[in-house]
Image 1 (cartoon, one colour):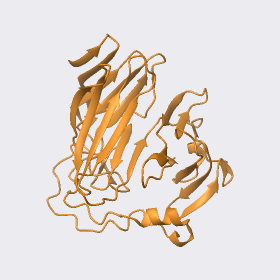
Image 2 (image 1 turned 180 degrees about the horizontal axis):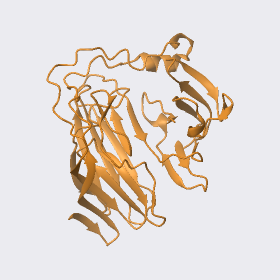
Image 3 (image 1 turned 60 degrees about the horizontal axis):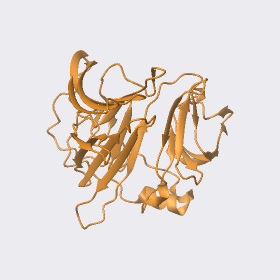
Image 4 (image 1 turned 90 degrees about the vertical axis):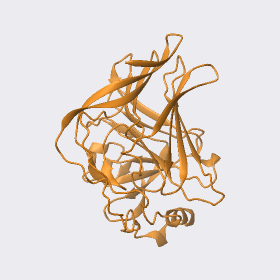
Length: 313
């Protein structure tokens, strides 16, 4: 283990090896992906939606993944591999980040209870779910550029340590997103006595041209019949395999309480219409009320922002 930083014996940032059964990613497909992206996530009932929602859906859709290439050369033969990981730790939390895999927050452990707050995938198996094909489940994924799992989700990010004003180590990740020509920067830090992991996202447009962009994070948690998702909302937009967005009430819908993911009879997305709170939040809790809460800055503080919490069973 290579120590990168230690502040007062409380907050540390270290580089560690993570050994996992993993499939080979293989080589990039050398053939350019000429197919259109427009058929992805289409909405059939656009005309019936509120004006602002319809305009945001229609604005700036990604036409092509170029110059990125498909990552479809993977196999299903799992072999133990050593992956580089970066670990932020204080007296309360231990966060493990995979810089070689899109900066995925792979694990977040509450040390007092020993509880894993995320779904920590025991294997690394790519599947065809991302814009470039290869994607894997688990942890917290950062997505920039467009709808769909972003082009950098199975690619390395640059990583470095910077110091905060009080000397607390900050893990900085950054990369160039090639379909939008934007720079993504992520800062992750744990103040010495904090029970919260802080993440700051910065998107830079070095051009004088206006660039459409879509930013979202994707959090996977352990799921049981008692798992419940709580969010300050009375309504949500339902999006299923019928390619429609329909406004439904929360929590009662279709004869069930939709805040319990395992009660759903089919896979579906819910995008919650959040109440105007200072810090929008969403939580996934077990029967005892333990689990993960995620909060963000006010969605109205930036131009062109539209926020919402999402649940997928």
